[in-house]
Length: 460
Image (cartoon, rainbow, N blue to C red; front, side, top):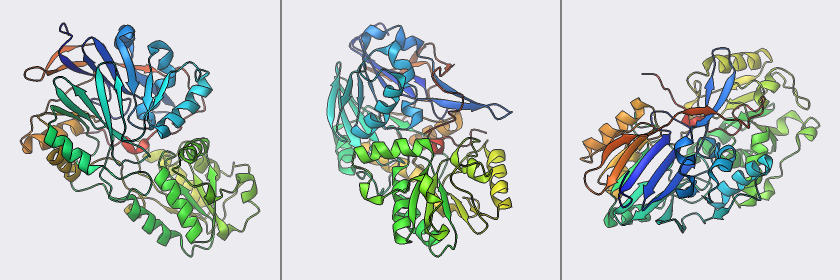
């Protein structure tokens, strides 16, 4: 990186793994960071450790760091920001919903007044040092996910963030396909893109289909209905509110992360104030058939709401035979044992359990399968694809698909220094990269808000 006029890409997290995303761009003597997230590691005994990318390389060049750009509000993209910002001390750029989620974290960390936050509307434009940025709306499993178009003298880079192509996302804008197609006409020197579902054929599915199926599933149930989902999936939360309305039930939120996410969604207009969530302390006074509980704990986390219900340890709600528990989520490989234990406990209470094993229509992924990747590259026509956000297996499948389309692909690992331009793109060096424990996590704060939908099978 001796020539300041050259354009470089340096992944420090999220390449060769799913989660803990942190990417750097360097040009004209300036650095720009895109995303700064966490991942988790579960020990054989079940204890979970929250991890974040080693920021040493970026911190040592802090005087060159022009800003941190955030693509969306999932923990594997923003979860390390509050912990690392005191070492980075740079402006933070985000859309309104992501900023609302992040400001709650800053407030908890006591740094909200210190962080220079720049809020850019979804689909808006801004600058970070010499980099000119344009956001493009793209669908995902949370609100306001953005592709970031990075304009330089060498050409444009498309940094996709996490995405899918959902024709009916229910919450937030649809994918701006016109902008993506126009981008392809203008020219893209590289697409740095999500690999999470690159091993899967077809398409990821639509939130609209999940809503329709969940409504038919809940209709005419005689007891309580409990739905566990990821707190960051605002469309799924809205779906359960609409299902409650259609089936004459009252929605009740169980779980701190659900309350935090719904506050951010209401503040930014993505969730109506008219749904009328019933406070949990009042839920016990309502008839069972009038209640729809929306709760955390899809993966059997011992302190989450669903586990407390299953162990009869919740202060306000006790389950009864004839109630039904719907896990509107993916069973994450590695979590089979705690999930099986949770399902068993619920069954012992006489609760009917429905998961993706019984009914795969109760959940859809937030990441692109192969047909969606093909659409993206047909529209944007990149000269190069750089797979990120995936294990080596996912990234290799992504690279193979790209090459089948006649587009060169460059497979990278964390710490790789990629010269994108001028000349032939190539890995020219390696810098320090790794994992460090996140220092600000309370002992009992297990995976709160983490986008577990992004953690797929990492085995061969």
